[in-house]
Every structure is written in structure tokens, then in C-alpha cells.
Image (cartoon, rainbow, N blue to C red):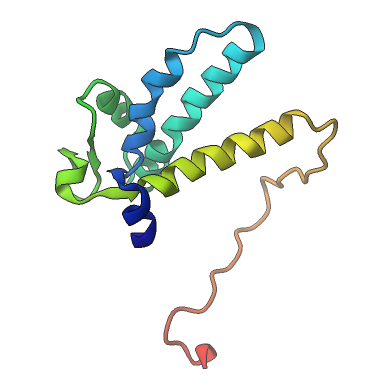
Amino acid sequence: ATKAAVEEGIVAGGGTAYINAIPAVEALKLEGDARVGVRIIKRALEEPIRQISSNAGIDGAVIVEKIKNSEKGIGYDVLTNEYVDMIKTGIVDPTKVTRSALQNAASVAATFLTTEAVVADIPDKNAPAQAGGPQGGSPDMY
């Protein structure tokens, strides 16, 4: 991560950079299926913050809307429960990693969309939860 940050710099972390990218996606003037794709991308850009918020027991939709209506670079710090300047606070991501994640996601989506058939398992909603592995330092570790 440090090497990537040195190569291309840093952006606001915690999913904030993805939210900050939404206006650029919205500015695309597309029609038909491409417009549907834009809506999907916009929603996907919100997912990191939604997941981080959910992991902290907070409604991600509220956090996303607040960040969308804030200045660029302002994000949500789940540890302090505050909206902060992510870079000044030290919550950052390497630009290269953030960019690569978007490029790879787009590549996978494009491949999936051009695939004629997909074979997948349907998750069993009644399946028991899997047991966790041994905790660190347990005798099984040696």
C-alpha cells in the first residue's frame, strides 16, 4: 500500500473517494442500456461506505447521503462517529489501489454481461452458520 501511495498518491479513504466520483459518473450523457449501467455503477460506488457503516451497526444510506451533500474529501469516521476531512484525519487509500479496484470491477462486470450462461449455487437460507476457525495462539496453531 505504501509503494502504491508513493507511485500515484492518496485519496480520501473509507469509501469517500468512491462517493466523490459519483458526480463524474452522473455527468455522462448516455441513453438506453448504457444509462442503466450508469445507475448500477453509481449504486456500486456507494457500497463500500454502506458496508463499513453496516459493520459498525449504522444505517449506510444515511451516511452515504450525508457524504454526498458534504464537501469533497469529507467522510464518516466510524470510530469517532463524526464526519471528518478524511485526509487530514489520516483515513486514506492509495489512489492506485482505488483506481485498480474500479477498473477490475468494470472488467469483471463487462465479462459477466457478455457471458451467455452462468452456473452458480443458490444459497440455502436455512443452512447452519459455519463454525469459526481456531483463535490466535491456540494449540492448533503450532
